[in-house]
Image (cartoon, rainbow, N blue to C red):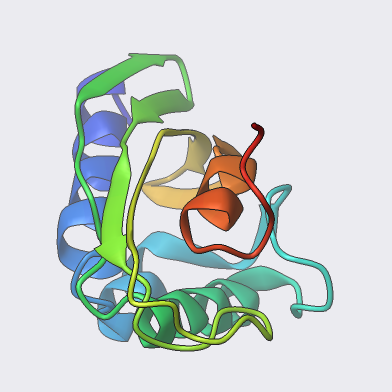
Length: 140
């Protein structure tokens, strides 16, 4: 696959899979044994863990959305800067809904093989999100 094809795959995964939580796109574009280095503790490995994580986030932030702001690629790696916005309307990992809006930065790196995402690393402002929903105090 070319760099542009890899970018198109990741873009499609975010825009057609992640944002609407379309599990058919997860099945199509994620390798069944995808290795996710950013998975929450306790989630199963592979594609099924991704699906459970997305469903948990959807329940907590039904209006949540990742917006692609930058995407660069080299070889089999695609790096995407995609901030997340949403309203905390449901439980998130044991934290009750706060009704608070959330806006955080996130960067994701995907490695692809033969048109499927086989590995993922992520870095999001999880601390900022926890402060915004009131789960931890903001610094004075």
